[in-house]
Image (tube, rainbow, N blue to C red; front, top):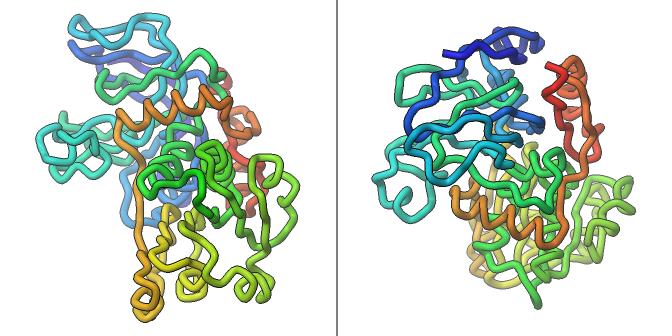
Length: 346
C-alpha cells in the first residue's frame, strides 16, 4: 500500500478536508498515475452531499483525472512510464456481459466500479482524483494526445465524453439542428463538440448573460428559456436537444421544440423525479432518452477528436484549499466553465 495525500468529505454535507488515503500496490495489469489535474464535476457535489442517495464516506471525489504514468505492472502492454493519461468515471467492470464486450462498459450489467464512491472487486472503497496519485487497471485508462494540455483535458474525462457520446449516438452532424440546454461545465463542451461535428448549434440557457461565450464556442444561436417567446419561436425546430441541466424541467415544453422523430436526451440528472404528459412524445414520434458517459474506447475516440479539433475545456484553475468554495460557486453557476484542481497544491 502507498499512502498519498487527498481531499475527502468525512461525511455527507461536511466540508472537504485534507487527509491521507491508501492506494493499493501496483498489480500485474495496473498503472500508477501521478495525478496532475482533477476537474470538479457537479456529480461530485451530488454524491458528496448524498443528493443521489446513500454514499460511502470518507469520500475522495474526482473522476476527471489527468496525469502521468510513473510505474507499470509486469503485464502492462498499453502504457509506459512517462505517458500522459486520463481516468474517467470507471475503474473496472465485469468485462463479461454483452455491454462490456461491445465496448459499453458504462452500461455494464454485471456491475461497473466507479472511480469513487464505489466498492472495488477487492472489497475496498474506491477513492477518486482529488489526490496525489491513483492506481488503475490499464484497461480503464486512456491516453491523452500530445495536442491537449493536461489541465484542459481533465474535464474531458467526464464533461467531454458525457456530451460526445450522445451527440455521436444521435448523429449530430451536418444538416442537423442541435440544441444544448444549459451552458455550464457539460453544456459548454456540448456546444464545442456539436459544432465540430458540423451541426447547427443553438444554446438554450436561462438568461442571455453567457451569450457572447456561447457564440464564441460555436453556437449559431442563443436563446433565453426564461422568455416565453423562445418556446413559441422555436416550436418544432430541433432534431436533437441535449439537456445538461440537473434541475427539474418542464419536459412537455421542451419536447414541443423537437421536429418529428426528434430526440430529447438527458445527461443532467436531477435529484427529484420529473413529470411528463405522454402525448408530448406520441405526437411527432419523439424520443425522450438518457445517456451516461462513454465506454473506454469511445472515450479515447473523444480525446483524439478533441485534440484534432483543438477542443479543451474552458477552465478556472484552483488550489486544493479552494475546493469547498468552488462547490458553492458551482451550485451558484458561478464558473466559466469548469473548476480544475492543481493537485500539486494538495
